[in-house]
Amino acid sequence: MSDFRAIRAKIAALESGTRAQAGVLPFGDASLDERLPGGGLPLGRWHEIVGVGLEAETSAAPAAFAALMARPLARRGEAVWVLRRDDLWAPGLAGLGFPPERLIHVCARDEAETLMVMEDALTTVGVSAVFGEVEDVDLTAGRRLQLACEKRGGTGFVIRRRPFGGAGLKAVAGSVATTRWCVRPALSEPAAGDFGLGAPRYHVELQRCRGGRTGAWILEADQAYSWEASDVAHPLRLVAELGDRELAPAQSAQARAA
Image (tube, rainbow, N blue to C red; front, side):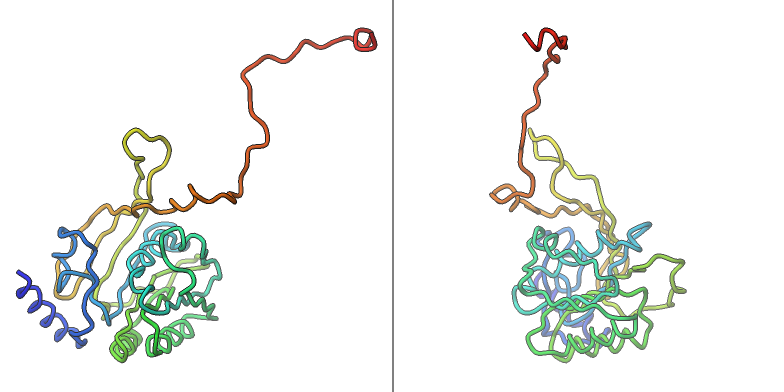
């Protein structure tokens, strides 16, 4: 089975014009990895993540999913995040296990500058993952991104986002992205016997995969934000306890004087 997956990975690499030796990043679940060429997320290429509804503007779930996918890569080198709306929340990424000390945050002026910075970052020594928030990527820009990925084996994550709302750009026909993921939030469930909210969950749909197969899953960010449970300097503290008791009867002014 492993030889068969290796052959599929080489064929997929030849079809997309990429280097086979970049390797893959497994998710760790056979039901998902077996649908990806080589048994994991192809590295040395760029991937597209989109949201639905309001996520097209806020991009909260797609950004979190992209950070979770790239978390192992961020431990191998620097990670560059390019965006137009300066609202990336580093503590939130840290809560997902993404190392914020490896993050380089770049705020671009427009779409063209975002793609240009992504290209430069992907061809920079020591950068393992590059994120870019853009509305769309045409075929020319997509090929340029792929060439930049191939130069040093970096992996790109294009998060489709309209950061300031609006109707958005006309969709571009075709794409050279290796995979396309559609992500939206899913209902969380607490562990058995617990109350409240559980770990974040995402409804993830693999809509396109070169050399692989599509599919849909509910994924959970295991142990996300668990660092708060042991953080002594929590931003909230208890200042008074509440009691289920009646108020004392009002006293007259004469009684109080006595």
